[in-house]
Amino acid sequence: MLDVKSIDVRLGEKLVLRDVTLTVGTGQTVAVLGPSGSGKSTLLRAVAGLVPIESGSITWDGQDLTTVPTHLRGFGLMFQGYALFPHLDVFGNVGFGLRMANLPEDDMRRRVAATLELVGLDGFDNRSIADLSGGEKQRVALARTLAPEPRMIMLDEPLGALDRALRERLMVDTRRILSDGGVTALVVTHDREEAEALSDRIALMREGSIVQAGTLPDILARPADAWVRDFLG
Figure 1 (cartoon, rainbow, N blue to C red):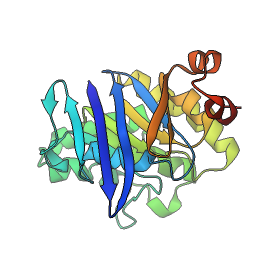
Figure 2 (spheres, rainbow, N blue to C red):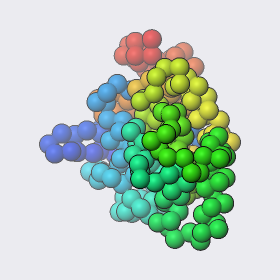
Figure 3 (spheres, rainbow, N blue to C red):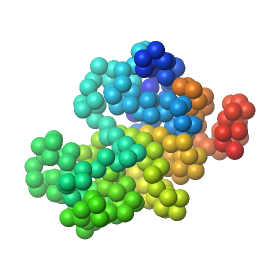
Figure 4 (cartoon, one colour):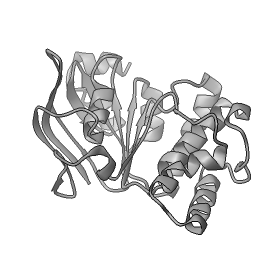
């Protein structure tokens, strides 16, 4: 379980996160939802260890991660632009982290095959990244994040670069993939529909603070303030 308690993050002179508290239970998907510039991606990067926290704590199952380097936290991070390697085929992209971890070749091939099957891309091993559609690239990026079997994955606007029709289909598919894999996930998005489709719980963020968290029906029934009511429409 991820437990973020009262963290502040300062970038330069600006306090970007203020007293942020958030919990993600094992096997649960939580979406951090808010407008652009509200601090969502900074929160993701703080949890990943890519930006330091000024105060508060970030723990996993009680272990303090404050001084733990990014590569030792056991989290997978998928960026909005996917950051796929154009010189590697689908197999090479999905297996990249496994090679870096020196997983034996046979084990790596089994892991890549199982992960591609999970995301619906079995048989795509030798495909060039340049020949993939936007939805296929999203699935490859998700497979690459899942293949090392991280204890939690973090998705930064995972569907933001896709057209609406494809986004709607992939919202359902991504939710299924996370559920079938029993994955613990933290998702950042500015889109209410995406947050609702992908997550078990939602944390609403505004100006560097989480203003309300819970299931969408509960938040809609009892919004914390007028901004929450208006933002959720």
